[in-house]
Length: 153
Image (cartoon, rainbow, N blue to C red; front, side, top):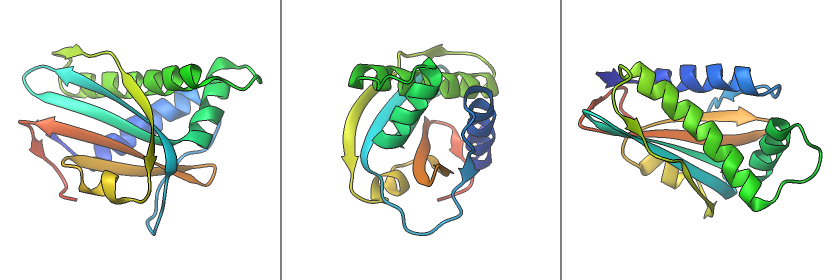
């Protein structure tokens, strides 16, 4: 099975529309920086190993957590990690379905990190799609083996 960047865009857009009121767009290009991020990843173990990874700016991750919890109180770091982990879990679950539904999902794992520039998302092996929400850019990567990669980066 060949996965394409357009698969990432379709899955994330679909999940986003079901979960959030904030508008989402595919990033049109240009220079971007993320600074402090929440990085969450989850792996699908099956005929191939596929890891889905999200890098979300902390400010956006916090806003999304508030929206998911329907609570105006500022969430703690654990709440933000849980919420972005859940978003990653849902995106990974959609990729599992796209891959035929076989395999096991790992538990999502997340950390607070710093991404000084665009390099990590664009140099990691695999596919990457960039999105904007509320003026902030976030990345969704799919790292896969032994699937063939679709559109080269």
